[in-house]
Every structure is written in C-alpha cells, then in structure tokens.
Image (cartoon, rainbow, N blue to C red):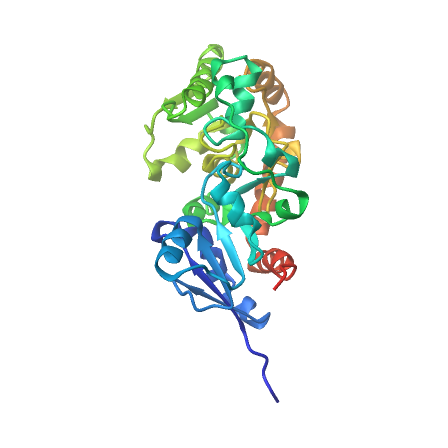
Length: 338
C-alpha cells in the first residue's frame, strides 16, 4: 500500500526564540499522524516558517523565497509594523500566514495610527491629550480584510517553556494569602508614556494604605522566587508594557492570583484566549483611577473571585494537554492555502 508523503514544516527562528515553538515538539507524534513533519533550523520544507529578521538575512544571501511561507513577527504588541516593508511582505501571495504573539479582534485596528509602532501607546496618549499624540504615525500601507485574515495569534503564549515551574504550583486559597495587592516590573521603558503608565499604576497601589501591598519597581524579585512571590498575594496588577499583554498575566493566573489589567477586550491570544471574557481577569481603566473600588469589590467577594480564578487556571492547564494543542494547531494549519 502506498504511504502518503509527509508535508514538511521547517521552522527557522533565532536561537533564543525557539522556545516560542517548543509546543510543536510536544505534539510531534500527533502531527506526524496527521501528515505533518516539523523540523527546526531547516529550510528544506514544503512550508517554511521564518522569523521576519531571519527571512531578511536569508533572502539577502539566497534570493526571494517562493515556497509557501509563514512569517513570525516577535514584536510583543498586537499592532502590525506600520512600515511598508512588513506590510508588503504580508501581501506576498506565498505568505500564507503571519504569526504574532497577540492579534487584534477587529482587523481595521491594524490600519490605525500608532506611537512608537504601538497602538496602545497611542490610546494612552489620546486618553489624556498627551503631547505624544502628536507623534501618531499612519501606516505606510493599508491592509484589507483578506490580508488581515493571514494574521494569527500564534504561537500560544502560555505554552512557552518559561511557564513549566508555574504549572506545577499547588493551589493556595486566597484568604490565606498575606498580601492583598502586588505588582512587580520595571517602570523604565524606552517610551516615556509607558513608563508613566506603569509608574502611575504603582502609585495607585501605594494609595491603598489600609491594604497589605507589595510593589517591586524594577526587576527586584529573582526569577526562581517569583512563583512564591505571586502565591503570597490575592491580586496582581499588570499594566501595559511594550505589548498589551505581559508574560506575568499567565504567571499570575497559574499562581492563582486575581489578575487586574487595563482594557484588553480588543486583544486576542492563541489557544487559550485569556482576554475574550472578563471573567478571566478584572478590567481597570487605563490609569487605574478605579483601583480602590476594584480591590474593595474583590475582597468583599473573595470566594467568588477565587472560584473564577481557579476555573481559569484549570481551563489553561486543560488547554495545555497535547490533544488540545494538536486540535488547535491543526484547526488553523489545515485552513492555510497550501
């Protein structure tokens, strides 16, 4: 009996970013059963996955790639670069998918002006009529609905190997945690408005003098100690950074904290869509002016919020099962125009 040839998917990304795609190694057997053979650092596949920077170097040496291709853009925010270079690359007929860690739910947002190549920075600027709003840049090339459909929220953020220790955390009831609200992260960003946004979040926590709080401005908590740090707190405040989401969002959920975020309803993440429903997090306003009301609401109804957070935690853990990962990956991969 003739055996159908495997479709070869070759992944070429910078060494430090292979971890974004390690989930494919977890399901390599299932993918082979489905007819897909995944290889790393190999450009001999039927379908090529290139990190954008790696692709540029490859084509400078070898000429244009003509085979079906997926492009991975590692920028953390949902916005697509406003430069014509990336947008023309997206429009190539052989580029069948554009992978980002997050994407916009409303495709027209890709055509909105940005500050520092980030849509959310522009939103912050316009919300307070900041002078940074004068720096808004229009995209060099508009994209239509067909091109926007190529943009996929992948790879799944929460499947990165960095979360392995967090998946093993035991459950600790919120009422036993000594800290009410915590926040940790640098307030010094290349974009002044982001630095201010994060600084103000810390200041709003400081105003909660009748609550037990911990604020770490800067990388003050060593990585190995961060899970224990999170498990000491009931709530974790996570402002915007270079992207709208943060790795700490999933770390906080894995640790059983109630996650408090600025508006995220327009942001999609892959496999487990954390921001699709506000039951997975509590939404603050852009500048955390309603933080006291949120903290009071959570503490007054701690049992309800603990159940919600635990349900989210269990759902994320379930989505990490190889069968779920395989179903999600094949769901979009088999729709690609190969």
